[in-house]
Image: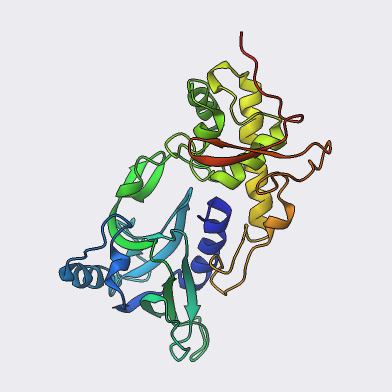
Length: 312
């Protein structure tokens, strides 16, 4: 599943092409995209409700917290010199395992896995006949979904209502490392599991948790409550650094299902030091990288560079 760098790469592209545009029409080609993986029986009225809610809305911008992405929607109209009121509505976009947001011209062929199309009217600064006119949601497996939700305040900013329990992520201004370290130090589960707890710190998934722990020299089974706060701080600093590094090259793409708005893949997989490298030599010491299961998730680590915890 896409993690913070992958979602942020998509968000940047979507924001660049859609901020300030008006949604003039919506076409839902597969109503299942309005549900979730646990709710695939969709009331026909949901399509009309979704279409009515977003048609005519102006896209203020594409935003993200952790792995959650949304379009903040405002009303059209108003005088040019009047300040725009804060947005109250969001179009929540969950990419799931295979969701893609793709920018297209109206006459481009429609991919067979396209589930929804937002037709856009861009501002006067865009020359007539140029630039994309459609934002298409493509999802081969239909694990992603779209939805309309009110915006609420949570952890220092407006977010969709269903994301109000999601903590700030290390790459946003609202993130407070000190508070996160304190909360982390109270956890008695494995630190790998704690890093995946999106109510504690958002955006860190399986890939970047493994990479952060390796960079910080902390074993995935270490107990945060019995780990020095300086080492917990090192883990968070490493998570921030590795996700920033991944973002700089478009994220991690293991197959063609994760791409940005132009269909390009990220290539941070070439720089991974432990994730997915079980049985290979550690790049630091040459020891064989090992794999274990933590909280139902595969974890990769070096037994020498990340010594197992010993508690008295």
